[in-house]
Length: 142
Image 1 (tube, rainbow, N blue to C red):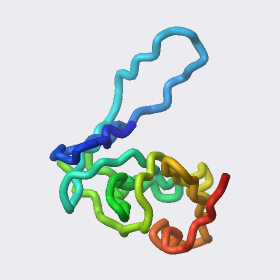
Image 2: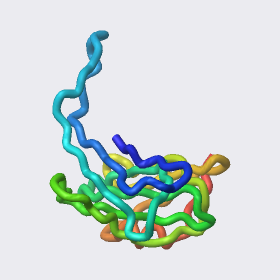
Image 3: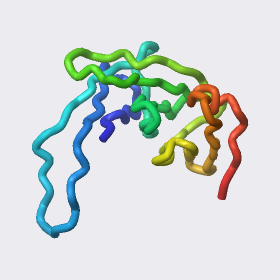
């Protein structure tokens, strides 16, 4: 769960909460009692973001900023630091704006991210990193 939004870009810290997925088989309220929190900041100042993805192949977390003319991709490497503030690594800049969501497929072979107007798709090539895949031109999908 990502507390990563910052519409006016002023927050000094952001938090990602890691929980075990609760069972939703009953109609009872679900209360999460155990969680771990990653506190992080960006190396280049406050950012607004809505896209939070975890790479199932290695556990790395990716955050894509939202409001820049060219958005930035940041990485929090696995294993995570739950004790100190993590400085997210700036991986690259993409020539897009206003990403509002995204995901990496469960098998790690596909990446999809969306803006308000478009959805972009990157097939992951065997042995390539997410950075290498993002250097390819994505497909526009309906």
